[in-house]
Image 1 (cartoon, rainbow, N blue to C red):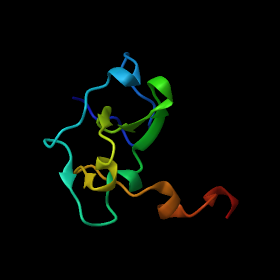
Image 2 (cartoon, helix red, strand yellow):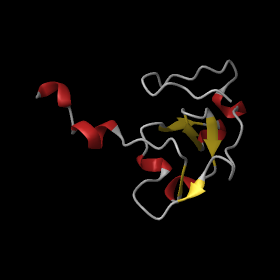
Image 3 (cartoon, helix red, strand yellow):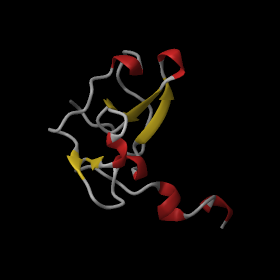
Length: 92
């Protein structure tokens, strides 16, 4: 699996996001801090079949099981740009 550069968060896989593999314990590990998938720069929500949102990691180009985005992270966790630079940093 080839990670996506953090500067480019567009999927590089050819298949639909729904067909991405599920990330497992080899990639995600439990976290008891604010460093969880949901606070990562690479975490995204996508509309899935039947309007059920899919949780994705663009770094690993994989799906995250519901609930695991709150309690897991990977070694590539990176702080959300909103937290790094503040809201609308281009205005400053």
